[in-house]
Length: 189
Image (cartoon, rainbow, N blue to C red; front, side):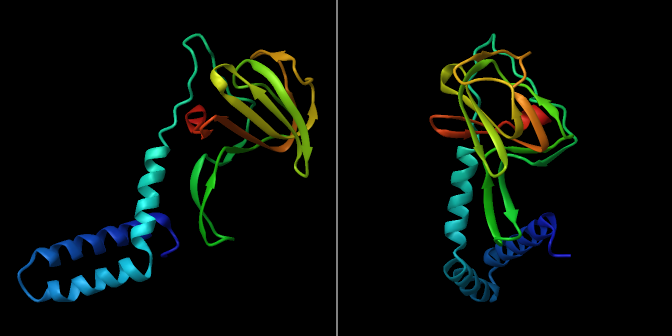
């Protein structure tokens, strides 16, 4: 029951509300609540976690800088968005982790197109397949990973109608600029 994020958040809100009410009262509950709050803040690192959360919320307002005539599109047809951009709870690591892109489940041999027109900056290979990095205007890059076949060459210009390659059962998409990864969740809303 307590595994659900929403349930845990509700419990925290209730506890904070009760602690706030106790702190405002003139009876002896303040003497009980103050040491408990100090203990939780000191021993569980809550202050640091809150500061990290506030910092991440401020930094998460990334907007992709595109000119008025730049068009954007989905890179391919997909079956499921398996992981969005942003912070998530990693059950294997038992901690919050950051996912800088989008992970999609797709049909085998799905054609992948660029989200915006650009130039092929790099083609590489790793254990998950092949990767294409495109450079767009204004220093924005898009990265497509999980391709099993690449149909473009480095240093060629690609438009929205061009096909970058074919992917296997998954595709990873990330957009970034000189400041780091950009939030592209809105493409899939």
